[in-house]
Amino acid sequence: MAEQQINVAVLGGGSFGTALASIGAANGARVRQWMRDEALVAQINREHRNGRYLPDYAIHPAVTASTSLATVLSGADLVLIAIPSKAFRSVVQAARPWLSPEQILVSTTKGIEAESFLLMSQVLEEETGFARIGVIAGPNLASEIADQQLTATVVASADTLTRTRVQQALSCRYFRVYASNDRHGVELGGALKNIYAIAAGMAAALGMGENTRSMLITRALAEMSRFAVAQGANPMTFLGLSGVGDLIVTCSSPLSRNFRVGQALGLGKTLDEAVEALGQVAEGVNTVKLVCAKAEEAGVYMPLAEGLYRVLFDGVPATDMARMLMMGEQSSDVEFILPREDVQQAHRDSGGWHG
Ligand SMILES: NC(=O)C1=CN([C@@H]2O[C@H](COP(=O)(O)OP(=O)(O)OC[C@H]3O[C@@H](n4cnc5c(N)ncnc54)[C@H](OP(=O)(O)O)[C@@H]3O)[C@@H](O)[C@H]2O)C=CC1
Ligand SMILES: O=C(CO)COP(=O)(O)O
Image 1 (tube, rainbow, N blue to C red):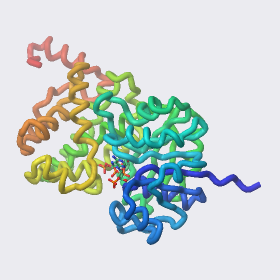
Image 2: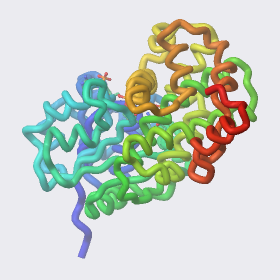
Image 3: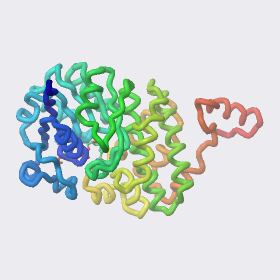
Image 4: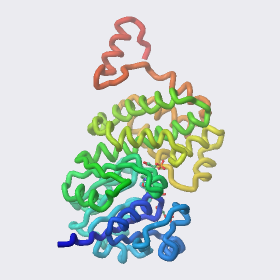
């Protein structure tokens, strides 16, 4: 018996939403994509191209776009929400009349809500109360996916059906979909890495070398893990695609918007100029603000995030990046093996501790 066709709704007309819509349609799903821009809807339906966000790639012709949430959501089995964190809740609220508990709701957004410090799947949970909620995250630069370069993502959910449906809908010969039941860890990794992508872009623009980038990525992972532990998340999840995988790609590629904001700052632009030149959302700018406040509250040591905060918001020159990298406390390499407290104690015992 032929498998029943799955109906997929994608909310958001940005590059990642568009790349995922195209994969779903190529896999045989009926895909409808919602966006608020009528001209873009017309272009996608007419030319099968998203001229604003992904101009160089063809979209599968079976994707149909619409500005009507009712049209896009009616009959949808799987709803992918690819909307920046700032607007995420308001779009979910607008969509709410056409959402139902049998549907699977999946966030693709790597950000944190400012007022509540909630991750996007928690916003989904709050707004709907549904059980079938998940996230996807991984090394997933949208334009590389549209170019059918090989990569993988992680679908994370406590719900088995959510995991398998997303795997069925999105995995293809160039896009693998691994499963996890640690939704919080996967989502937190995706949000936190944007902070360090900005720092890495800045370091690259300042001419720092590959050793430096490697140190930055590794210490970023240590810092992210420390924060995760304080948030009650499992830092081991950061060893997967949504942690280390995504951290490496966004700290290495000018295709990352966060990396590009960092590059612009490193070249002497102000934050406003850098964001304006980007013309898209770099989630890390808000995330660093929220995470630094939370880290201070929880007493978590995050020298890289704090240094970046000072460059972004306190007028500290980007050229002070090097100091930011080198002046932090020299604690343990891998804190799971040698806890930071032990190193601090050893420094104190030898009279060399001034921290
Ligand atoms: N791009 C990438 O490479 C990847 C992105 N992600 C994550 O996925 C999320 C979505 O990414 P992406 O697809 O690139 O899109 P963007 O983050 O660039 O978001 C653009 C889409 O959101 C819409 N939007 C923004 N504000 C509102 C609003 N107030 N009301 C309605 N719609 C709004 C935009 O509409 P309009 O054009 O009208 O402004 C556009 O359709 C991001 O937050 C990112 O963290 C994850 C992996 C890869
Ligand atoms: O998350 C991404 C790739 O996995 C995309 O990163 P940016 O939002 O920095 O473009």
